[in-house]
Image 1: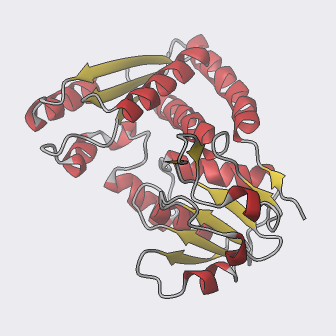
Image 2: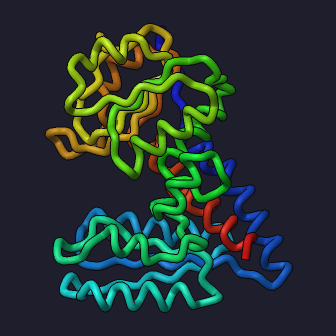
Length: 281
């Protein structure tokens, strides 16, 4: 068995056609959906991420502004900028790129963003809405993973899904989304006693820990669907995920590549969330 690829680039392209159509409909009503991206410091990876997010907005009919601030920006100054964006009627979504410099409390900054503009889905109000199954903004990466499962027509009802990772950004919201689709969910992490025993039971594995080759072929049940959220580097500097891709591909039924898998979907779901924020205002 060689797994079929779930192509995040192709799926993103399909979804972005719908994004552009929705954005055009909003502009026809005099509303230009707007996203503000705030970058503090000069982290190279963050610079690439924000550039891709701004470009995606521009390519699909959304208005986007990028605020660049030096790493020495104070927490009070950043909170002041967030509040100004909260009050700006031309901005429907606010994204503060993480990580922030060590002297700034990221949680405090996230909570300062209006929940109506929390298109990253990190605000406590968004997390609470997801927990109780109410409408709200879903974090973009797990939201993209769910769209990928939808794209292959995978019915999660009654399936056993194992999420490796418990972060507030991916692991925990991923588990909640899978639960909403009636999967039985196990969350594994660094203190899990026997990870292999858990993953061998899984119909779906979502690997989201940021550790190269963490999931190997002998840990995957034949025919399982494997979603790789990891973003790492090989010894020669090439991008790779959390799974031993070439080996796992011979066991799984569907698999996401890195690059070209979950990454493009994350940005696409950010556009979707920004559109929904604009439509609700």
